[in-house]
Image 1 (cartoon, rainbow, N blue to C red):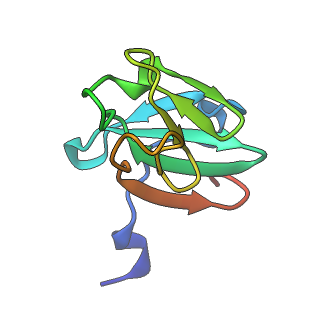
Image 2: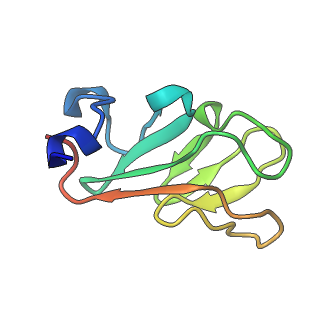
Amino acid sequence: MAEEEQYQKVANRKDLKEVGLLKIEPNRKSIISAMVIGNVYAVDSICSHKGGPLAEGSLGGYNLTCHWHYAVFDIRNATSMLRMESPLWCFGKWRGGLQ
């Protein structure tokens, strides 16, 4: 399989704002994408605590906070900052953002 066929374009660089959240749905999988200090991160868009929509949460630095019950996740690796919730699915980091 050609390398180009392994990737699906889901957004343009202009769609992402520094420390902003963007919900994308490649292959019908709901994901949150965020850019922090020029790097793009992607994690599951559903909170592992109570199923809240993380796209409606907030991002402060690397901390992604669910607005339902204030569960906090590190956007870099999708781990729970409070160690109470299960980690989210982490889809990766792209240095320098999108092309």
